Length: 239
Image 1 (cartoon, rainbow, N blue to C red):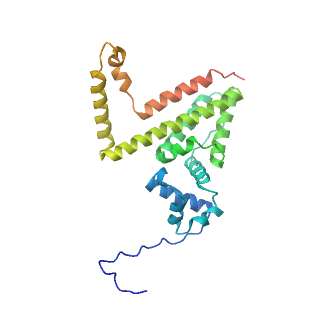
Image 2: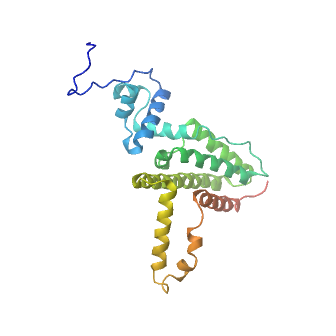
Image 3: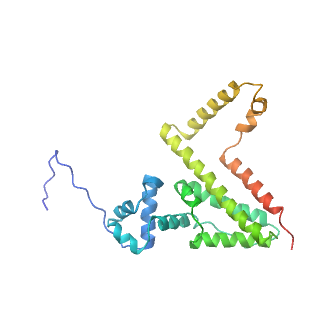
């Protein structure tokens, strides 16, 4: 190979990344890197292979395909979620604690919120969290069927809220504004629009506009979480 510099009119040769020893963990690590740069729509087995400096075919010895890769990524997101030992006296607070942890985890990885909506918990971390929450609910006296359905609804609520945050994040980035500037502008436009509606047709909307527009993401998530937990608590039978 020549040690001379390339002429200025020649496209420089692309440096291929050094190959890493392949393993399932390495594949997931590379996928997380691609996801962070390209988003969920840009994630592909070919892109992950390029990140690793190898060919797509070599990945299939560790991951069966993109669907399994997404499952592994979702499981990675909740790896740090901890579940306390069930306390029948504090079971509602414990459920909320785990839900908040999961919410924060998805807030850090909003690109995976959509993927989680179509992912049944089969990974080790997802199973650990599901098993732990189920134990808490049963210890609190919630019947098994209601506990199971509650966990399904809770996971949808957390993922859906996080996904909405991801969509708004994309709008903020596209606007080129700061988060605060974007929201201030949007809320001002919404307020102006609602106040321009025919007052006789929308009296309640206009009279309670402050209440309709109050509260940030965390406040609204906490309110919805309270509703869900209070709802399942109505089925609880003290043991």
